[in-house]
Image 1 (tube, rainbow, N blue to C red):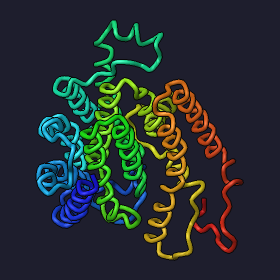
Image 2: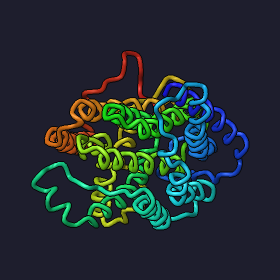
Image 3: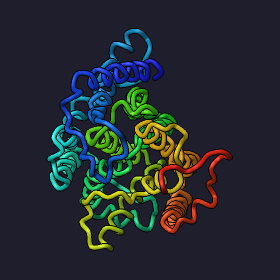
Image 4: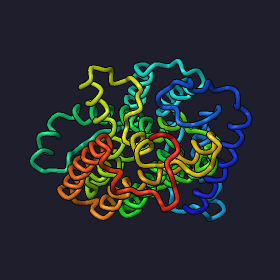
Length: 377
């Protein structure tokens, strides 16, 4: 597995650099008035292409690594890499096209991600076969189409959840790395080295991208990167639970509760205001953290100051992610415990959001002595 991770990391590292240089002027940048813009200058949003190259080449290199005795006990034929690439194509290509043109609307991207979900069900036999509670599972199995429908919804929805939290350098990328490593850990615990290899390759490829993304922000993952992370993680999560009854369905749910709950809460607050759920705004949790907790730095250059604040935002959310990942790994077999942690996170999220909106969080986060606020917030 170490050799696989190394190949995926190096190919992604060099592939992302190549994408940044070769397609520097290809992608259309955000408008200066876009609410989700929190950077200075024009930065390429095609980093997802480098991640895909690293992930796919890493997995394709497994037979070569096995001849070198560096990737044993991985059944390469069972990976079905060409099928995976076909399944991922609609969502990824839709995101990539939007990164280039900025003209693919939310509805079209949702339809394309639904296409990926339908292909996953048809070609990978994906289905949510149980809910983790015996009283509900008996009824759930009586209608198999419910499991397939939920699988389509999960594969279609998680890419958009990753896209929502992909607002600051290192946030969505680190989330993808941590989740993939957690999935690989449990997959190895149950002896599924094929799923572990897919997860480790994606984590390593994402790490190669992060070298250029955090903290310098030289390239962004874009919609293509978010859709790649969301689609692969969703398929991995459902497949792991489907293949191994010992793994609770609430394990991946707790792992991914942050982007999932961010999406659901965003839909609720937009609809409560009478706005379309697909309308972009600057009121997500990470954006409030950026505005109301992360303070100005001493550098007088405006662009450098903006970059520094951008980079200081993600670590706050990394800590938030750790509050869900650690119990998920510890209690991956126990549905009741995992469901309780999901509920606890939802309550904590709403409490933190309300505190930020009402300016109550600042009393707990103070500037170091000698710092001063210089941006008027």
